Image (cartoon, rainbow, N blue to C red; front, side, top):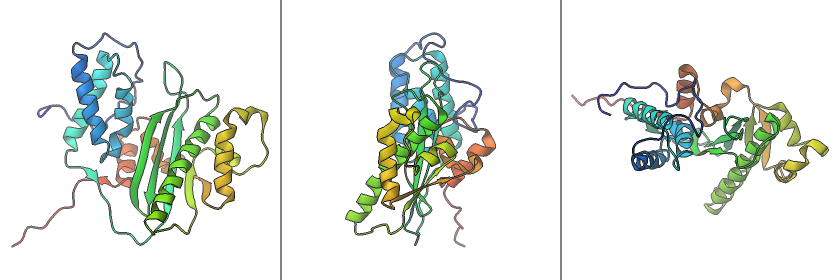
Length: 256
């Protein structure tokens, strides 16, 4: 891939990958090997988490469009080979999270892709991009399941910090861009149409009532979790990538 044409983003925003698109690849083992290697890379490259999650969905029966999507990720990595996740000293010990869902994004099953990211101060410490195991009947339901997922992760992180003798004194902030999902997090009335997500609703409400979590609205323009749920236009992707602190190393001044 040394002389390949570089890609500005890891995902083609104009294409949706389906299970039966195109002919099977000639060497499925090569596909699986490269996709598995990219999974390891996501440990320090959250900017490719969504793209890698998408190509890993088809490991059992990879097709040519899937392989083309995988090669696009490699072309993006080749152009950003010096990028990595940067952590910085901070005196702010507060957990801030963003969560989103691409409702019905899968063209085969119409399941949603859930994504979230967690910041301790200004540092990204946890993130996820995952296909929802069950079908959501509305965008509010899909995004509320995303809220429940990030609240569960935030609870684990809070307990970990407590064991490390760094307890968090302030509530975890959960940013979501769906007003209906935010309303469900604190509204005590149980509606008939939300009974099928009752466990998630009670779990989040309990954490809100205890003061451990606050679910707030964020405009879509500042919804950093979008990078984990869908392919983004170049300018927005680069903006969000920088917000996640995925950057090249700082320039060093040569000694004279």
